[in-house]
Length: 232
Image (tube, rainbow, N blue to C red):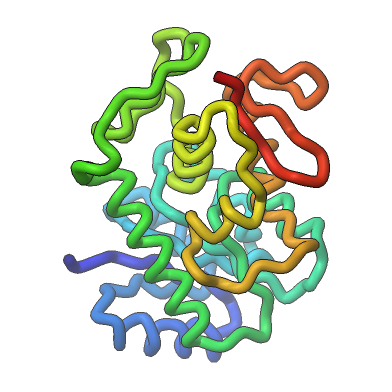
């Protein structure tokens, strides 16, 4: 399949390098050095994934991420020069699926892109025999086959990562699923660090969409020091 990838980074050397590696994977790359050009492309082109630099001079990558999430669910990978939790958490909260800190190895970014596209294809395409079925829980209906979620009979717009987390928790109703297990099931065999808060941020965003609260959760319950669960 000919995947279309948006790359937006004002650092031309980085954008050019990312383009080379992604083209080597036979992806079609739409490369831009300004946010304005990137936004024009988003509005006019059917994309499969976006790689966005957070620090851009005209409009930052977080604003582009927010704009994408108004109408699209394809994966977003954020690039950040700051090794701080604030940028990462903000990006994930706005709907980004993954982040990578500069400087990074181009092969690592290519691997992240490939993993996100693999999940997105599964999320938006047909289901396999193993994941066919409908999961129901207190007004929440997950149609795994159609990749659709209803909350009190109203469609719920989830990113592929949010859908994957919710599906895994619902398929394991009554059992605690650790953050590490969620991470490995969603991102594959990538390295997991104990201080990795990626799952925590996605859970927080998912709770907001479900109208859930951490203090009195109706759906996703935190089991401190262990992981998360959805009651039977």
